[in-house]
Every structure is written in C-alpha cells, then in structure tokens.
Amino acid sequence: MRLMSSVGLSHFITWIFCILPFISSFNDGHIKEQAVNLMKKFPLIDGHNDLALQLRKMYNNRLSKINLRTLNSTRTNLEKLKAGRVGAQFWSAYVLCNAQDKDAVRLTLEQIDVIKRMCKEYEELELVTSSSGISDSTKIACLIGLEGGHSIDSSLGTLRMFYDLGVRYMTLTHTCNTPWAETSATGIHSFYQRGTSLTEFGKEVIKEMNRIGMIIDLSHTSFNTSRAVLEITKAPVIFSHSAAFALCPRTRNVPDDILLSIRKNQGLVMVNFYTELIACGKSANISTVADHFDQIKMIAGAEYIGIGGDYDGVNGFPIGLEDASKYPSLIEELLRRGWSEEELGGVLRNNFLRVFSQVERVRDEQMSLKPNEEEVPADEVNYACRLDLRALARNTFLNSNAQESGRHNPIQVKP
Image 1 (spheres, one colour):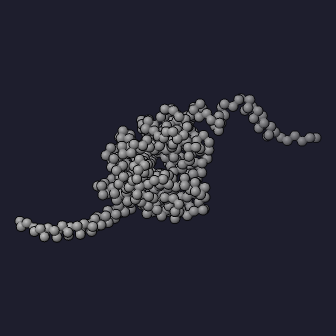
Image 2: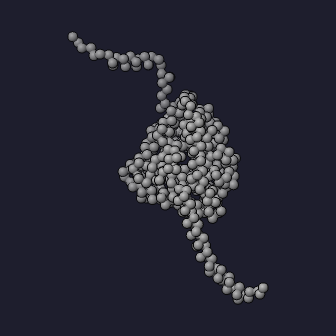
C-alpha cells in the first residue's frame, strides 16, 4: 500500500476536524429526537413536587390570584410540565414540622384542598388515585403525597381519612422525629428526641399503610428507620426524592446496603435534583445527576430507579435542570451514557407503575382485615393540645350528661 504523503495526511486531518462539528451536531440532534420520542411513549411520572407549598407561601392558596399555565414565580407551571414531558406528578401536601402537636392536620387538609382544586380547575390536569388511573389518563395525572408523618398526629384513623381524600403515599418523617419514627435530620427540631428508629406503634402504621394501599415513602427517614421498615413491610416502598449516599454522604441519601434491600423489596429510589444531595452543596450539572443514576443502577439495578425532581421544594438545582421543563435533558445524557430505551422507559414510568400496582395487590390481598384500632401510647404524645377523653373524671361525664338531659326536658310553664 502506498503511504500517504505528508501533504495528503495534513489535508486529511484538516478535513476530519472540519466535519467533526457536523458529526457532533448530527449525533446531538439524533439523541434529542430519540429522547423526545421516548418520553412521548413513556411520559414521566415524577415522585415529588412542592408547588403546593409555594402556593401557600406566596399566594395563601388563592388560586384565583394566579394563572398556573404561565406562573413565573415558581419552577413549575403547566407550560413547563408539558415541555418536560411530564405525564403524572405527585404533588406534595407538606406542612412544616413546627406545626407538629399544633395544627398540622388542619394545615395538611388545606394543602390537600388546594391540590384538588388546582387539578379540578385546569383542564390540562386530572386527579387520579390508582395505577390504572395513571395509565388511563390522557392529561397530566395528579397524585397526592403526604410529606411528613407529623401530619397524621399519630392517628391511624387520620391516616385512613387522608387515604380516602386521595393521598397515595406518606413520607414517614420530615426534618423532625414523630412519636413513632426517626428522621434523617439532626439538630433541627427538638420533637421527640430519642434513639428508637421505629416504635411498636410505628410498626402498626406500616402495617396499616400496607392494608389500605398507601405507598410508604422513606425519604427523610433515618437509615435505621428505613432498615426497620424494610424488615416489616409486605409491599414495595419508595424513596420519593433521594439520591446515592456513596456519591454524596448526606443522611438524606440512600447507602448501598439499603439500595440492595430496595432491590430485594422490589421498591424504588426516585432521584432528587437538589444540589445539596447530589453534589453535597457544590455546583452541579446534568452529568452530576446522571452519576447518581449510574451508581444506583450499579448497586440495585435500573429497574429500581425513578425520578423525583423536588422542584419548588428547595433552592439549588444543577445547570441544565433548573425547572420542570428540563427533564428531557437528563434523558439525553443517560442515552449518551448507553442506557437502553427499555431501562429509560422503566425510569420514566414503568418502574413506578410496577411498585404502585404491587402496593395495590398487597392491599387487595388484605381486604378481609378490619381497620387497625391500635393507638399510640398516651405517655408518648402527652402535650397540651391533645384531649384524652378517657382521662376525664367520671363525675365530669355525669355532670355533662345531666346538663344534656336537662336541655331536652319539656319547658315548664308557670301556671
């Protein structure tokens, strides 16, 4: 073979460098198109969005004052959700831990109310409460997640009523302990400080969630609480908005041993975009987030990964994932890294539908069981705003009954 002359080689190298941008542009264009087509086929189910919190903080839940299609004071609006190819969204009904032992139940009801009104008032949205409801919806399916077990005030009856109102997952803790479960946070609140990860009543909460078909969310729980729950639950669990501890050692993230337990449980880790959790507070980009997907895939498998962006819940998102319109950019990056369309179909949608369907199956298998009537021990929730009728003196009841009976006596008319 005749060797290429130095002049010819120089021209060839120059030609290669000239066409490289066109090749790169073609590849990027192909990947963008592939990502869009994939998300058309598998519209995203996102596990966590705090828009409802912002509606309370900024507008006092007055939907009449805003247009959710074009709202620009938040990272989420309807136009951004459409651009992000979101097919279903869990809206967080969240109230601050400062409301624990006060008015957490009322505030939570108000957050559920604003979510339901929002989903009713906009034709682009549809409230659903089942896995089949997600699959059948031709709109953006709305689901409700309860963020923080303090919202049920240690009451299984309240838990059941929230389920009846449409709540389909509960995050067991937020940044405070409850009387029955331990948070991943330390030093933020003084509520119920102790070393018990899950009390006996906490175990009853898990069993009742299994029975009624409410998904257990372990984001914000301590490692030991997560481990204890995974030993008890009969249904798959989720982390609705967490990331990989191996890449960012924050207690809000999921360590490898729990990732392996999630695989065994057939559960799901829905990856959070918050820079504090994916880059430990440092600057981040889409590649940083994709690293967490790779890590969880390596330990647990692609079948146990979803997406829980946490938009409008925190400040600090990666470059390229600043708001709810940016999800396709993440899918493009994962395609570049060699993730298959089948794996990404699972990440976008099918993995969560599998978990939700299995939770419903466990519920259906327990249809014969009656509602759990266990109560949290009185000495574990002893605070001024909690009324214990059993503690009232018997003569209080007698006096009260006498007064009531007197009210119903016929009026005596003076002759």
